[in-house]
Length: 160
Image (tube, rainbow, N blue to C red):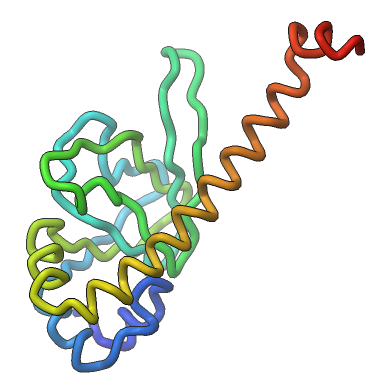
């Protein structure tokens, strides 16, 4: 059973009023996953937006059979599966539990309906989402620049 208190522990939802959270509650589903369970697969239709109540989830991409790259680590209180909030999208990575996890899911289409019906809820939620995505983009840019600065061809250009 999912409670309002569970939803308040999620970063994106913590600034929403109890009244708004009451409207979200009926569409939230609870799931338990074991270590190495796959929450969703890359390329599959993005139906659900996920909130991590407990545990740690890795967002991964399989470059080859031998190489898997971890794009991000989602910790308790954060969300993943953003593609579900863009109609017609597919998941861009795998979501794999790195430890036992309690995960909440919200059908993307139903959640978008709520956000469209209540513009205050939509504004607060999208503001939080923009901040998280900004942080992730900055982190990825930093990682990319670090890797590029060590690339042999770049080092030659820099005379190092």
